Image (cartoon, rainbow, N blue to C red; front, side):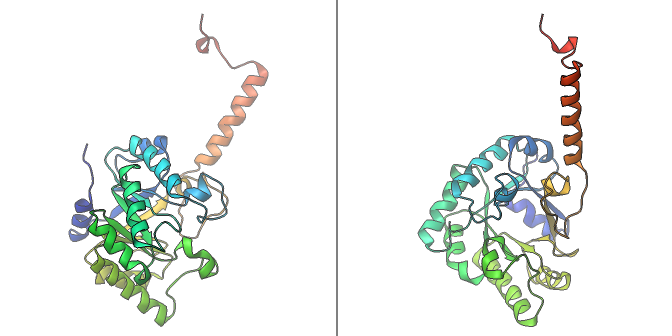
Length: 265
């Protein structure tokens, strides 16, 4: 098994090889997709996709650990990145390091992902100093959805764009191993990517990032509550599941299932 590491993704940036990351939250999905993808992200989007919350705010460190453990058991070589959820790192540096340590030690993550720029630099430096790799996250940061006033593209005016560029450089200097850029204009993402020696992973950030990430349940058509513009559907598994369940119900009602081959004698 060719296991990916932080060094692997840095090397791919240097060699101009595109990186792939998919978000998943359970053993079965990890088992199916992890062999060929570079990174698996156990995202706090599990709040929406797995737990049915309106947003990511209610997700806890224990939730992340639980799902990361499941993904770890199904993983076949991908680098496992796990989100640090809302209020697990913002207030206190010591708490940030402790929670990051739990996610790595108990959950099995190899990297933790933190939303924000200059305002969380102390936390990022402390976590990196504790020998835990950190992936940054700039642009649309879902944990700040109440502050941002909704899911909106970030960095469209000059002031905001300059802040994103500066924050990306600060994150790199603090020791981040990569940065997710979410919902930012393509030209801005291109500038940030060129300015850094660490990889950028785009989600709604255009074609020029070093890699891309999608939630696997979005790209397979399984999560249908809403579909962002940046999502491309590579399958309609949700419809397949619905049809399979209907067929099962019909066969039970008509006596077609179970068949002889399904029966113990």
